Length: 60
Image 1: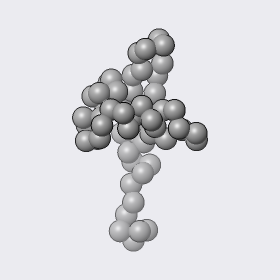
Image 2: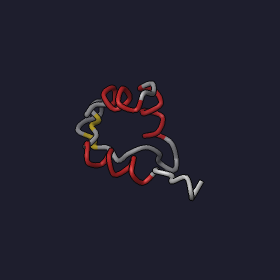
Image 3: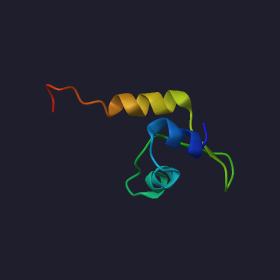
Image 4: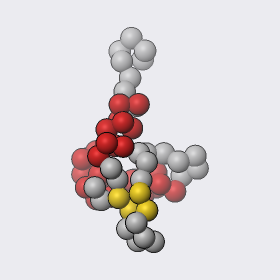
């Protein structure tokens, strides 16, 4: 999926997704660099990242 598709899915602005990629340490899901201007996200990676961020009420 593209940066814009991921942003729509997460209901955030695409600039947030771009900022996650350049933050140190990295934030957001793993990404694939196809070229200097083309970044893609695997839906499996996105799902795993979302699962890793899950907080249960008992742990909160």
